[in-house]
Image (spheres, rainbow, N blue to C red):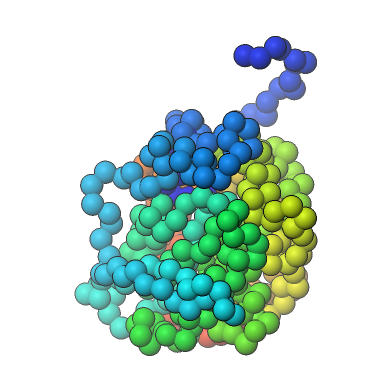
Length: 352
C-alpha cells in the first residue's frame, strides 16, 4: 500500500460484539483516521478500478501531497527496460544517491510499489523511494509494472522480474556493487518482489543479496488471525484485500499459484530476507509466517516487527518518530549488503 494513499443509517441489526482494544500507537490514530476517510470504499461503494483511482486522486491520496520540494537525491531518470518474453517494455524510474555523500559502487535496489496491484504508481511512491535512497545511499530502480484489472496476474510479476533481470545485467551502468543487488517492495509490491525472486531462482538469476519486504501480501487465502483481529479500523481492511485479490486474479484465477501466493512456494535457495510487519495490519501473520518458512527452508531472515503501527506506516516518517526510525533502519539494512552481500542463498546478504 502506498505512501501517498495513506494521506481517505441503515436499519439497526443485531448488536455487534465488543471491538478489541485499540492497539495502535495513540500518536498514529489521527493520521490513520484521516487516511481512511480519504480512501475509496473498495468492494463497497466503489467496485470499479478506474473509479477507485479517480477517488484516490481526488482525495489527494493518489499522489505525493507532501508540501515543499521532494527529498533531494543525486539524480532521477525515467526510462523503459525490455519486458519478459515478448511483453511490453516496462517503465522504470532510476534514483541515484548523491555521489558526494555516497561515493563508489553502491547497492542497487529493484523496488515495486504497493497499491493492491491496482492503485498507485511511480509518483505515489516517489517520496518513499527518495527517502530510502537517502537513508541507504543505494541506487533505486522503481518499477511501473502493469496494473490489474487491465493486466491481471501474472503480468505484474513478470514485469517485476523483467526489471530485476535488466538491473542485474546493468549494474556497472547503474553504479552498483555487483555483490549488492537487492529486491524490495511494500504491500502488493512486496508480493511482486517475492515472485520475481522465485522467477530469478528458476530462470538463471540474477543473483540477489537481499530481499526487503515491507508489510507484504503473500497469501491469497486471507484466512489468518490478523485478518480477523485487524481487518478493520486500521486503514487497510479485509474488505479492501478481498477486492484487490479479485482484481488481480480475475474470474477463475488461481490464488494458490506460488507466483501469486509466495507462501505456497518452495522457498529454498532464495536470498536472505528482512521482513517488516506492522502490528495493526491484516497482513501481519502472513509476513511473519513467510519469515519462519524461510528459516525452515535454510534461508537467513530477520523479522522487523512494529506492534503499534498500521499498514503503510513508513509513509508517516515525517510525523511519527517510530516510522522515521524504522525507515532509517531499513537504510542501514540495504547499505549492509555492500560488505555482507555475496550471492543468493544461505551464504549471502544481510538480514539484520
